[in-house]
Image 1: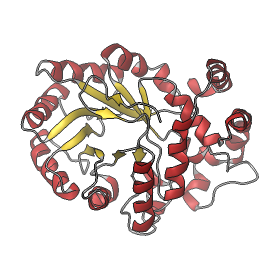
Image 2: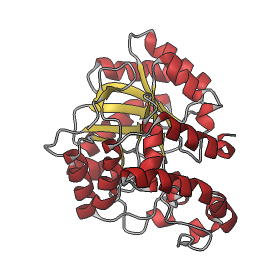
Image 3: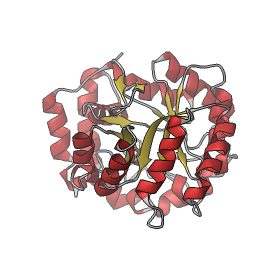
Length: 320
C-alpha cells in the first residue's frame, strides 16, 4: 500500500485514491433519471454502500467524496450514517442548490454538518464557480469557518486556473492553503493539461482531485460499438454512440495489454495512469463492494514511465 500524501499544502493526510459517493443514498432509480448521473447508473442500496465503505477502509482508502447537491442531501446523510464511529475522511461540496449567495454559507455548512453527523468537515469544496459570487469574498467566509474549527481543509471544484489563483490568494491572506481543485480528468478528458489547471495546481501546491476518472465507465472495457450501455439517457449521450465507442477501442486494447502484465483490468490501469502523477488524486465512484475493491487494487502496482508515455500518446486526441 502506498504512503498517504498531504492534500496540497494542507495538514490533511489522504490516500492516493478516494471513493466517489455521488449515488449513495439515492432513492432507487432516481440517478437513472437525473441527467448529471446518467454515466453512473442508479444506487445499489445501503448494504452494498456499506460493503463499499468497509472494503475501501480495509484496503487503506479512507477518503470519501460527496456533495450537498447529490440526491438533495441524501448522499451526505447516507455517508454520515455509514461513517458513524469510523475513522474516515469526508470531502463534501456546497451549495445544495443553484440560488446560493455568500450570505447562505453558514446555513449551508450547518445543514451539511447535521447530515454528516459531524462537528467538522475534513475537506469543504465550493462545487462550481458563479459569476455572481466574488471568489475572494467567499474564501474569506470559508476562512472564518476554518478558524472556527468547522472546516479542516479548503478546496474548490470546477475552477479555472485563474479562479484557482484568486481563491489561493484570498486564502493565503488568512494564512490558509488552498488544498485542492476537483475537476474532470481522465485518459479521455485531458483538458486540465492544456487549459492551465494542472500547471496552476503544480505552481500553487494544490492537489488536483480527478472526478469521473473512468470517463463514465468508458475506460472499463465493458462497452463497445456492439455492446452499448443500456438505459435511455446513456443511449442518447454522444460519448456512448457507436462511433465514439469504436474510436476508443485502441485505447481499451492498450489498457488491456498493459493490465495483463500486472493481472489488472483496463479500469485499474486507467486509474493508475492518473495516480502516477503525484499531484493527482482520482475519486472513482463505488456503488458496491465489488467496484470499491476493484478500485482499491489500483494501489497494488505501478506503471513504468514507458507505459505512461504509451498511454499519453494513445490518447492525444482527447487532450484537445
